[in-house]
Length: 419
Ligand code: AMP
Ligand code: MG
Image (cartoon, rainbow, N blue to C red; front, top):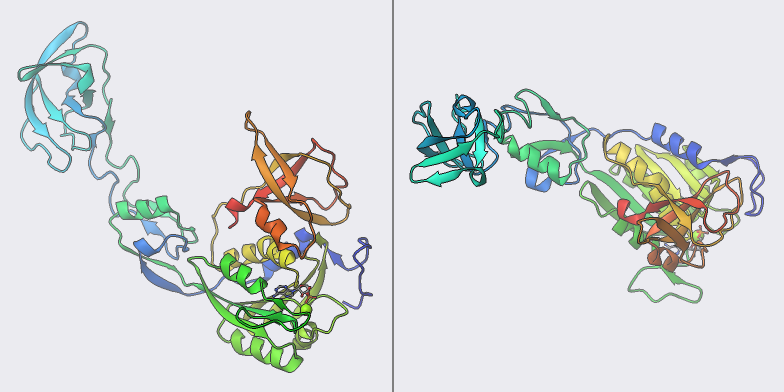
């Protein structure tokens, strides 16, 4: 940490940490939070399951028909030609037939209706000829056809969902199919956010000369607007060491995570860095990433701390590349599919220096043969938030790669998998 302060042109300097190493240290350091709450499943989408969901019974609970038609014994099917079976009863979904269907008879049956024991095939109504109270049926049918067996979706006693499952719409339906109305989910993660910088003004205030509106807190508020997160908005903190540290220490008694923006780079009048250095538990990294190179990470009291850079695009990039994966680990999520990264063809040349990851803002498009191409949104400065707003994907140029020629493949990560 005593390395000479880096300059942006020198990327082989000592003390630079790769994106991969930074992320793996973050993920190994942050804890999984303990504690749960009981929720009605209607409110559980986007939460993390805290207990296994076990099937108390088979789903479907009874063997039933997959079509509208006629249930019968396969032994009554003709070996060739056709035969006639008398309709012995009617079964509807939710209204099973309780009488007896004798050999030589069939049961008129609707989709979802229970198939009585002994009948082992359902023939679609389109495949028979109905004549008075009988059907004329041919030889092309097979035993087991059009029957949904009890337990074919889920067997009684089976663990249907494991703790740590990030709950999606089909999960909620699956839980409902087991008759379960309430489940235990991990409690919400409490995330405090703050902006620092004497030039930063709240909405509603009139910025003084050289002042600008606080945008970072609002992009973060929106990025953190998720079912499993409670945000504590600390506002803009005064750039004064003792008072900064006091605010962070106080909130660390309550919050699981503290995220600040600004004041972690070098050679400026901000005190965030000085204050945090004093607390002793925080590392100041020079991450080999553009944008987002200065990044502070550590703990304040019991809270994980992320000191993101001040530049608005760097905030978004570091949030999605480092903070979001950490929040997902802390929530106990263990099998949410991660945001997809796939290859797209560069629509034009891209400049790239080897020795750092570069995250550009891109627009991905699919052509008529469904191939993806990507172009940048133009100016890529880390203060140009409109570049992020115009984009629909990050372009991720790996640590080692150098200049990219038009037509080469590059990694892209669509925002729709992240936001
Ligand atoms: P810093 O990392 O504090 O040196 O900030 C880098 C740049 O980001 C400066 O131009 C700041 O004015 C700008 N910046 C810092 N915080 C914010 C914020 N909350 N909203 C918008 N811009 C910011
Ligand atoms: Mg600042």
